[in-house]
Length: 401
Image (cartoon, rainbow, N blue to C red; front, top):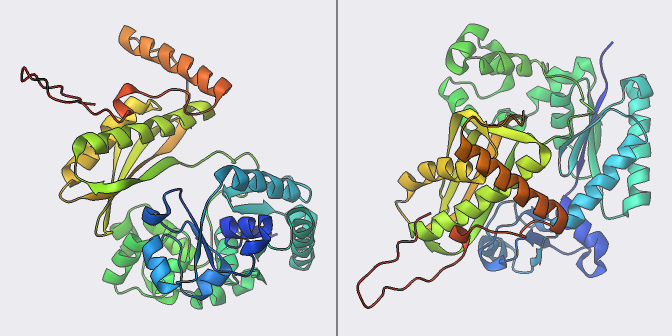
């Protein structure tokens, strides 16, 4: 028996939440941004803004150029997190098998509850009704129904906004043939470029490519591509306990473009401490650190490092990410960011070295303060915007992180 998976994706989530909360914004093109709107990007565009050409991750000045009537609105992460918990609680009313995929997406395994795809369609409509009753008319969702998570997500992407589509097992190939390669979750720009180099531009051509050739080019990922071309998903089913994050990351758009290493270190160090705190709070450590830089001309560069000893210490995260960022400083930087992935549970094993044990004790005490008084209750001196001046004696203050 095939499984029945729902993928539910909220439409223009941040924007629709704000439109539900503020009647003045309804029916108007809005873009959700960071606090510094002039130098920020559009985190989410409303459905009205998308129709006028505004896209997610577009700079605010570019978005305003395309859509002069666009209303820029600073986002409220706490509000979006609260709504996320509320709609996942609604899903739990229909099945215990709910797996949050992101802040606005979730997978539901309703195989037992729905029994067949007709029952799944009826259940999806009931979920929509509950969302409308609980969250309001302006927070809507698109729903894809398929035999596995990979195809349910693809099905959902084809019916935005506010659509519902059902893809039964015998229809998987037809769905893939109607889609582009990079419509599938897991085929990003780099994989797409390598596929094009092999003269593979459609799913039909991907299916025609021998598995051995794919494995030679993509190693173990070649098997995934081969299976995905047939609509098969080898990943585990919906994991009701997998609300855990797959990665932790933060980025920051600088107040002004700069190549000043002291300034860049200060911001990157602060981001590293934020990432480290969230990881320690959730009891995980990371083996892969990725640093991201966006330059003044809006070109970007990302690199990653894999470490032998997993860590959740902001100092370690900073050192690794700075070693990545420093060689990239060939022009003024607009944005810096880092993320940590390849997560495992923290074994909480004391270090053999006294210095490291002392640092673990300090971090534990600082984390207790944050648990009690909230994030931002402490900061490293190195992240403060110090303005050190040269003494008349000629002695230099070197403020090195």
